[in-house]
Image (cartoon, rainbow, N blue to C red):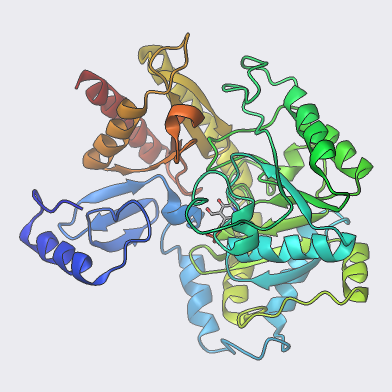
Length: 443
Ligand SMILES: Cc1ncc(COP(=O)(O)O)c(C=O)c1O
């Protein structure tokens, strides 16, 4: 972290960061955030910054939304934490209202804290139910940092910590812009899916348990599989008795223009995990399964017991968020605002040769930067400079797609503002993206 150009207040702050904080990632953003509101952050010098990363993708309703604040305040006068076998009305209300938004095949929930934890539980369920242990995951997926979830994570954070869980197998990520098997260009014809399952058939020791998917890959480059992909995946999984897990940490609860992204895929997963957005900034996640599967799990002695399972406080917050998402039709809003934003980005694409592709769903958007549109070589330096320049100009955002190795995975600029973002804020974001690419390219 450089503190060369920082104000005295920031310099002092950064000095203490260097002294006392352990570096768990590439580096901290050189700022002391003092206030957050809606789609905006404010730093130590009062500078306003648009947050097109929605925090860590959790602030779906924007920062410090009155609904979230109100629920937290109310929850402080109710049971905040209990024995893990005790329940409050808020937890049962949440489970019932969640089931009301889902098809019959998804009815019973358990509530945990983080996304990784929810996937850990989902994988354990699949293993318990099937008696197998092999899991297929997209080779650009991100499912979390805990052991089982990390084994199914390829977008980064994989190296240097010893062996992964046995039975970890991959499925090529169906990226139409960068075909993983060098077969298609632009329109994925699902050959990679067939190849993936043929590979599974060669590698399996006959102990398949699940295929886990981010139905739209978020950390892996904002990749939406083509129409018909998931119906075929479901068929291939059924033929092998694999359960289908959808991890909707980033895509669920309105962001992609429908309450759940699986509604756009034509299939219903056997196990659904939700996290991030469910707590609006509080640690909160859920695993949802159908009644039959729940019965089977219970018969087989399914056990997943944590300190914060069924905690009442985050459940109260999640319930308030869920109700707000429904009453304010936030998914429809995300679709409308996403279309508006995407149209603006496509107009920028006309002007910047470096914008090779604009894609996504609702307000989960990726802009792929290339050296030229013919070769599609990733414009890694330009992309990194543009994201940095955008921050200097007042827009915080992150990189997706090959974050570990953009030369191979592509340089994708991820833009995902809160679903409550205004048109004026999107316009400001577009103007900053425009200027940042121009200035990054000119250097
Ligand atoms: C799709 C997906 N699943 C799971 C996770 C892990 O969630 P958490 O960091 O809350 O454990 C992430 C985190 O980015 C994610 O993007």
